[in-house]
Length: 577
Image: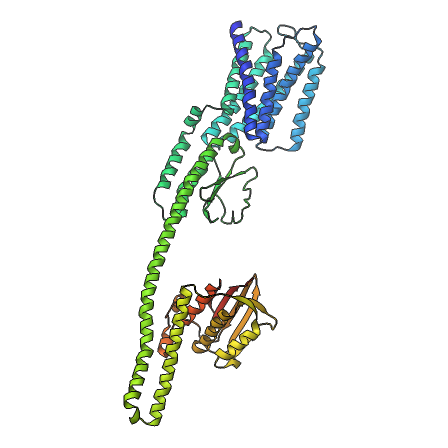
């Protein structure tokens, strides 16, 4: 039995010293609060094992003092272990001070003891009391640490859960070893052998908890690995949207790291998937802490996206490889999102080309149709005047001449509008913003464009100055005012304001407004409502040209119903520098 006890003793010495080295490098690799206290705790017990090798003689004061130091190191170990587990979930400062004070009292008591009895020597009552208090202190702190690790590990992924459970078992087993050591009265008793075995089991469990072999981790990780493979396989299958891609891997990604919430956003900083996260979370770069002890881990995605996981405080310490797996999955997810983005861009480009081709064909057909009407009319008038002019009465001839002039002007206006559209489509319009006195300029436009300028109310402060292109503003406002009289009814109100670095102009009339079914086609080329076609006025190009000018200026032109009735067109232009 003596040889077995000695064998376990030497194994324990080497193992605990090795564990101190492992936890030291564990701290070097992480440099966080938890790893710091782990390194302190097991550095403490490694030093204890080294000092315990020095023999103690009852008459040798330095060696006796060294024995007290060994006991003091043993006293503070459970406090350091408690601080390791407490690094994940903070307890009250008062409790921390209380436990530190109790540890300090035991250390002082240790040095105040008149004598530390050796194995086989009688134990005085004062030492028996010290041993009882020492064991209670050790048992309580170790039990709290073990319980905290075990309970917290239940919600973690497999690897982290197994590691935390092993640390809990190691802490409990080491407490058992201390109890057996306190009860041991002989170096060759069964208690001494049981102490060695328990200490060896504890150090093995500590080793597996802090540095489990890769093969063991792979075995533990089998459930998450299966989900990982399913997630990767799902990324390889076709998806029509980024949300569909993310939906396939959202929960498996959370399960890999034991996250209780997860959100994923793409390279355009749009959240394309979320789980247990409110809709308004991640509207900015700042991420809220969703519960008191949550740890937020942000994992970049290839191509510029990002994964945000809200996990437990244990995950970054015990699940470092799982986070690496999530980063690898993030790389694949980025490629899948980019593939969907390219597909959508190609699809949209193809639809745009098809629509452009359709618009081009329609434009040619409609332009030919619109041009044919005035050309045919003009040709008829000219032929009539050429062949029958001397037979017509003066009044008839003058009427034909007036109609000829009107149709010629219509043809000229139509050709000018078509040229405008061609220049806008070719982006050959030069935009030159300049300071403009808005009210004075609007008065000039209204006087030239409105059939009755007195029916137009200009609601613009006299000192309003905007930096916009003069010609663009004139073309758009002329079109809107003309349409207000042509299709709407007076009174017509023109108002303008500028704020948020934008110039906003509104033209509103008191007519019937635009029929709801026609609103989607209002700005299409050659689009004319039934009423305008019946009236035979307009070409259906004015609003299309006006919006094109607005967009060429970096703004937009939109329609909305006026209250209580009428049409309201709102022009928004960025203010030039």
